[in-house]
Amino acid sequence: MKSQELLVAMKLASLGIHEARRASKDIAPKAFAIRLPDEQDGDWQPWSIDHGIPPIHAEVSATNWTHRDLAKSLNISLSACNRAIHGGLARGLLRRSPRNHQILPNAAALEEFLIHGAKYVFPTEYKAEARGLPTCFAAPVLSDHLSSAGSQIYVWPDPFGNTQGTVLVPLNEAVVTSVKGDPILYGLLALFDSIRSGQARERNLAIEQLKKELSWL
Image 1 (cartoon, rainbow, N blue to C red):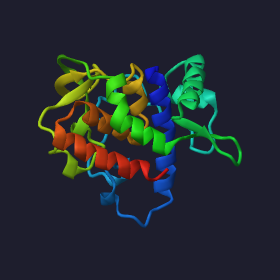
Image 2 (image 1 turned 180 degrees about the vertical axis):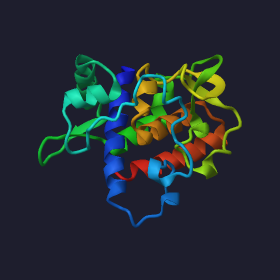
Image 3 (image 1 turned 120 degrees about the horizontal axis):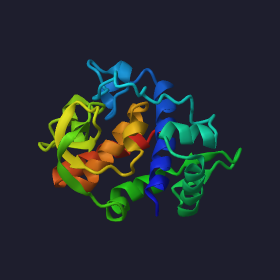
Image 4 (image 1 turned 30 degrees about the vertical axis):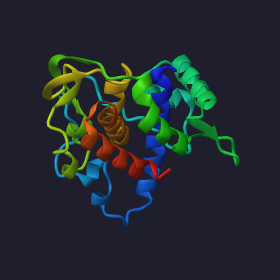
């Protein structure tokens, strides 16, 4: 299994979660593990925004996207995106809507894989301290009450990141650019990192919060 297959499935999940949450404005933001930019007191972007590389804000939605849109939003090639979609369908992480054959995330399969299987397929790899984007419970897109769950600061390496910490190699090399335009995807990947790297308490809390987010699909 290629890491891009899981990244694409999580991106499509983030699009579905984003639309469902936007349509449910009567629910207090504190009910969510992952906070959208307008639900936060501070800046959710833990990187320098004046480094000449604009954040990727792709105009894609859960119900209106093309393979080219998706590839651009993830900063991967179109051919890689196509292969990832085909792989996701073959492995059951994605499904086709019986109504219009639109490709959607298979929420139940994605949840099961992220919690029970993905950490064995994509085990954690650590490197020396560096500057980067904080992940696990240090990710600023996660709710404040989660930030104290882990004492170790892990980062995805990025020379424009504002946080110093132990490097946790991201799921895929496209992660750092992909999350800069998508706080939901950032949160899902940070929770996944907590599941595959955390101690029992951190892992259980991450599983609980991941289930809450995926329940929107």
